Length: 604
Image (cartoon, rainbow, N blue to C red; front, side):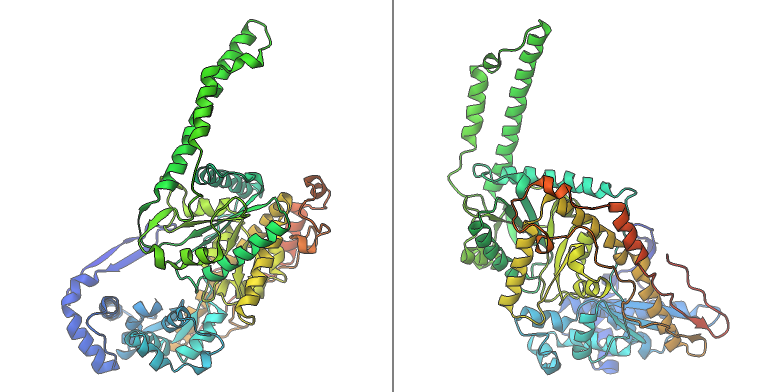
């Protein structure tokens, strides 16, 4: 069989070797392979599903590659192949069907059917055991995809998912209980000094504030030093990602802040890609007006400075009334006149193609958050992923996250949740749920997650209205924190980054591969787990020093002075040392070769 294969290094950190298979080059074999798939596995793939067709091509090419490699080995090989998601799963099925000497692992990051069912607003988690999976998949015209996913899960030597909540889902929908949970990790870069990430937060926050000055020109009647930036980001799945409950909570928060006469202003960013045709003219104009004001201020400053310099040169104190002449006042008045605005600041930064049917915009119309002067909560919908080359908000996603105060991810369906994990690694507090893999993982590993800036919203055992009230309470408490309390909380959040480091979580993948070797080659390998294979490990204690939020604080009002906070006992080094003392190192995963011992690399 002829095929086009590329071999090289992946352009990421570590530069691992990578093999790329060109599925388009072998597309002429598609009909023959689909016939073989039907004859051997009774799975039929319709001609119009291009994604499934690519999965067939990739699956047969993967099985061919592994078969050729095994055939050309001098000694009987012990190969481990790890397949992720249904798109790669057919290769696993073919490896088992052809009885190749390959230990196979299949990881589902989210079940196909689960994502579809949750998007349909069904009571998913309470009805898991009741679904007729074949009928549900057929009704949504994904039965062939579901068959590929279920076949891979059933055929794999070891089946894994990324979280305990997805393990429950997979057991009911794919009809197999996962052998082990393999949580997703991140490459964590630690700073040598604790204050470095706080400095990055301040720098990025200043850039967001510049954008806000332009966006709200003519209506900048709030104090940016008392403004809190919230954000939600990810795939545009209105209900699955919790955008619906977030907007409802913002409306309730707006009411609470207004009736309590709070000086705090909330700006909530929605970073979710949608169909647009260009930037909003009014939004671009706002940034142009801001730049014009800045240029005017710089010009007047230079003229003022020159006159001040000349006055001091001749040994005279300047006459302040003569420092600014008529021309200076004219320039400033023209600049002020340019900031006058007849309309409210725009909600959406782009022109939406489907404005009238957009879920976020329709919800904003219903709850009435239009960025008016009396609203303490402002909303900005940015329907495009962030980029440092954008003329509007020139920031990469990482910079933007660092500049915000709180990430809000009240997802109903979130098998893992990279967005709150990324917030944690960057020292930014976040709100997650007990229906997300990340939220469950943090509840398992931390005695009191909220003390470390990880707020877990209950969406599993509470109704929508109760969950919305709880989210509103979290947001209101967060708004009442003083600047010092937020700094302390960010320090605590950042210290959790070790929990999400691949150096820790990678051991679950190691365990899965050794388990697969023991099942595929029982005469050669033994797998003897000494501890449960769930994502257990060390637990963090609740910090004993400064309370993280006003709910547990001596202050009952958000109006206390900053000076009072300075009296609170807090020693950053001492608290960090307490955390280190109470961390139990992750267990070592055992694996023995019957002929000789296979040593695992130490992961400290």
